[in-house]
Length: 118
Length: 110
Image (tube, rainbow over all chains, first blue to last red; front, side, top):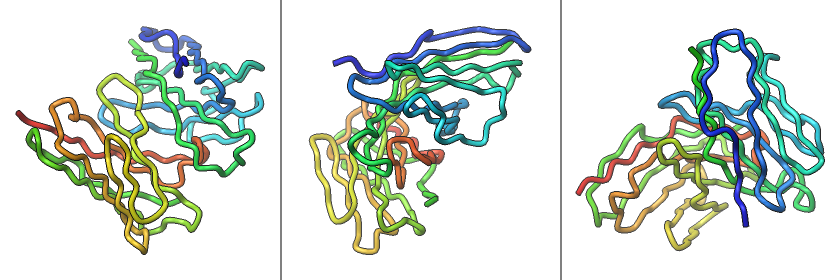
């Protein structure tokens, strides 16, 4: 049973460029959340996708956008990259359908994409 | 949203029991308490989740007092490989309105 997979594992970009990160959720999961984790800090919630729609967003600018596909996989796009966007980007999946929107299902995380901005 | 407070770091030795306490004074009635473990350059891994009293699984125990304003993660007989950051979360509904704090950095020494 495959867990959450993310690609690429590492990426180097320069300021002003755009980047797309990809995530495949754990088999059977329908909800994907994205997090940004700066060095030495806890993960910060970016947004969550369910049924191909963004259903909640954290305190991140519109440069951060996402998408969820019918197979539940997801992409995170970041435009106009800044030096401060350098971080580990984590994807987590969970199951919402059939368990209720407010279920206490724990999340399953991938090992992230390490994004470095030069 | 309930905020959590944990010690920034803890040291221990191999074979000892480690207890990490988390404060969550504003926990809501329907909030569960969830603990994650994170190693460097990896994503967090679910350890244990509970609502009240005591929960035990193959890797840890979670103690929750009656007022639920705090919880304690207990790791029995830690090894060097338990060196990691441990996060306490309240109300983790599959990522919906999830807030991670800074976590507790546990260092296990030989």
